[in-house]
Amino acid sequence: MSSEAAPTTSIRRRLLLFLIGSLLLMITGAAVVTYRVAMQSANDAYDRSLLDPAFDIADNVRLDAAGAHVDLPQKALEALVYDQVDKVIFQVRSPENVIVDGVTDLPPPTDVLSEQHRFFDSQYRGEKIRIAALRTPAGFVVQVGETLHKRNRLVWDILVAELVPTLLIGLGAILLTWFGVARGLVPLELLRSELLDRAPNDLRPLAATAAPLEIAPVISAFNRLLDHLRDASAMQQRFLANAAHQLRTPLAGLQMHLELLLRRELPEDVRAELQRMHSATVRASRLAIQLLALAKAESAPDIGRDLEIVDLRVIGDAAARDWAPKAHAQQIDLGFSLERAVILGDPLLLPELFDNLIDNALRYTPAGGTITVHTGCDEGIPSLCIEDSGPGIPVEERSKVVERFHRVAGTPGDGSGLGLAIVKEVVDRHHGVLDIGARDVRGGTRVRVTFPKSGVTEERQH
Image 1: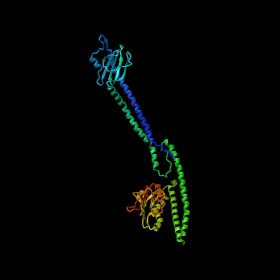
Image 2: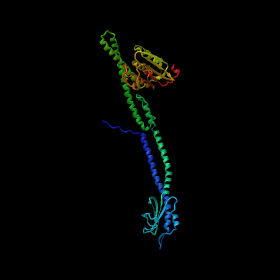
Image 3: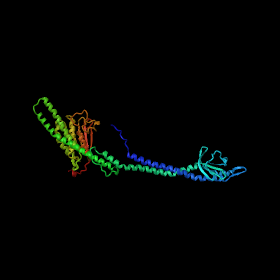
Image 4: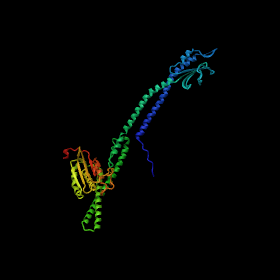
């Protein structure tokens, strides 16, 4: 039964969308309100000035023998409807809806009662106008209209005066929101970085003191999960160590009995079978030893035991005595160039580092080859380097050989693929750097391990 993966969501994105969307909505609402207020203010201001000529014209409408007319000179009428910006027009209609004076193509207004006036928007010759209309006691209707240039200019002035500060405040609020959200999510980023920087076997609980209160329950639940994983890992390591330890004794006994049998006079076919059994037993013993070393390297650090001052030269000197006979038997020149290199390390794990590196070099270096072990300091940085004249490791395989049970295809030897995995665990435990490369242009392998500066003074070293 398969289920579709739920789409990922981002807290940052959701917060920014909500907060910035709310700000933009408020700014839009403020713009709408400001526009309506500006329009109302412009109409109130200019409607009063538009009504004055309408009253003046209405006061001068006469009905005599010559008929209805506006009793004002032409220049007076022109003065009443003169404007520097807008075009102003007027119209006078009789009670019978007959045009008395003014423009003829202005439609009559509706709903204008006697001695009342009203304002409305209309169009005149394709252009929007504002009209003030009133009805005299005699029933005459006077309309005075003007274009909207002054009004629109006033509306835009009000909009700019009101909205520019609003937009600036909104932009500042958006920037502050962006910064505030990013600042608020810093603890989550720090927590993410801490988790990404951890080694796979680092199951220490997360510190809840620096985390925000909102994610404290998540950290608490995650720490409980880490507790369960730590217990399961410890149980697995104990089982692996116990199993490897229990296997060492019977395998050692089996190896001893096979060696005793090989000293006797035996038929060639029986001797060949016993030699194959002896080789398999030796490999099984070595595998048990490596599993035990791996369990020890992967196990949680002993809280009751601090790191000690360790000189790599001393460990290298002990390794020289242990491995020289085997190198001599394989006709391999095993050399040591040991200088003082003091680190803070685990004296139980560092010998495993030397042993596995030397054992790995011996397994893949042919007879007549050379292996050189270096220890020393380069600009105060302690290091260990082992070079051999073996077949070397291809570039594409160098990141894979530190994985458990990984062997380069086609290489000779009977290794189990655990040696460099143990080396990687020990190096990681000491916060060192493991570098695998070629010895020189002719081939071979160079494994270099650098350790952090110990900060130990010469007096403490001695």
